[in-house]
Length: 156
Image (cartoon, rainbow, N blue to C red; front, side):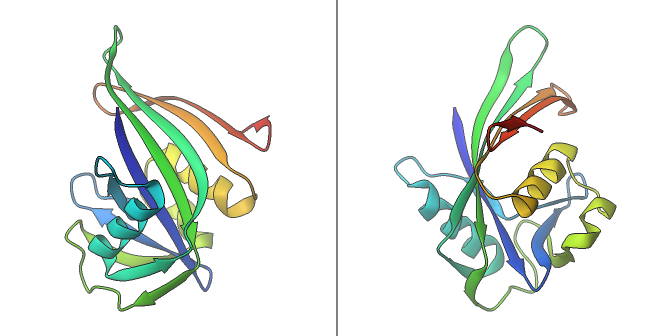
């Protein structure tokens, strides 16, 4: 199973996002963990590599399982640890190796192209304390088929 960390960085009512060229969708910074890396270390490393920023005290806010199925079996299985940070230092890169960087107003997140499960997860983390748990199922074309989210003991 592949392990991934992503980190939502909020500053003055905006989130730092990356628009990846493959689909033209916006994502929060993050990526694959190295084998012996701890999740908070991986989140900090990925944020730095993609943005040039050093985050302070990333807070775990979500554990999400991504499954890709061909209808018969699971072709891919990933666990994503979603972090949240407000504190950071450094200078934002003018361009990330992963795509276009921008501070997106939280109020405008519904207006940008992004994976609908990611949109729901980001919104949940921004609007309620606690740890978000979720399972996201995609077909082999990477189209979202089903989501199950739980936060503070209730299904979303």
